[in-house]
Length: 200
Picture: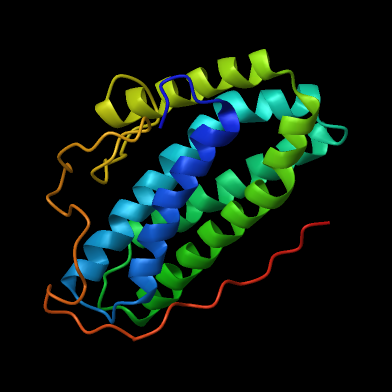
């Protein structure tokens, strides 16, 4: 991805990484690899949401016709994500509730991506000057990289083998894009259906 990618390109790259992660989760039956991947995905999504709160939401409030409401909804979704991931952290993977929470994480991330890619980001591109989009892209990239390197909040995030600039780097837990067909875990054989979210 170009070094000077704008906000929409930066977030679309990040969304693509998250989409691959939740697709892999949905394709695995319960096993240690899936548990590790759920944790990695939750931490990455939490970092993603917090950085958006710091940089994207102020841009939404200032640029979109319904930006105040849109930013408020994004804030509510971030709080929900915080609570869900905290529940996952405190729930044993052998507990029957864990599978329910993991499935919620998958659906929440898919709905987050759907809303931003089909509603918020296209509207932002249409209403925001390109110079401002470029500046916001730099802020988002810096915020994500700093957070994952431990130089800035939010804490607890782990890299998944890619930086926000698209470069490949060593994963922090050794997970590194596992192959579900060779990791000793059965796959479900089909991708989870994306849940349609209300876009109104």
